Length: 177
Image (cartoon, rainbow, N blue to C red):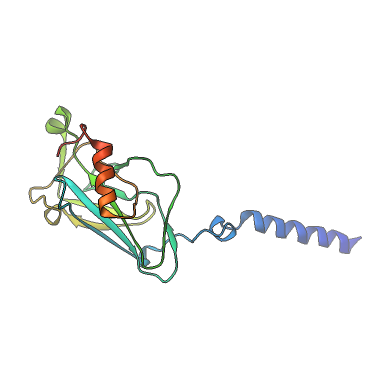
């Protein structure tokens, strides 16, 4: 009887372990990218005024996952740029691959002109739980600072051209050029 009880306890423990194992391992999805394995970049768009192009490269030899959209914060302001369209789930980043996004910081409204804050830096992270990398507004084509009002970012995408097109489509008529 005792052996049967121990077998039942062992089976229950194995079942509990299987149920609580990380989804990335049990479902065959890649593990979350370590911030140390990523290179994050930001630069002004060559094609669209007021847009900053972002990229994240997986420098590791294994695929990993980042959030579906970058986390872009502005100086000491609260909040972050809102993703448009809203991504569904994480973004898989193959080994040595790069993903791209575009961020637009200023809405074309009277409120933006009258109340938009000016910041001298932004911080970009591949996922919200990461510290991210800071960039000075001067290096992003805004030597007097970036004006911020209702900022949006695209999800991580496969090319800069795709990211620029999505930010234009998502903000057409709503954001200043």
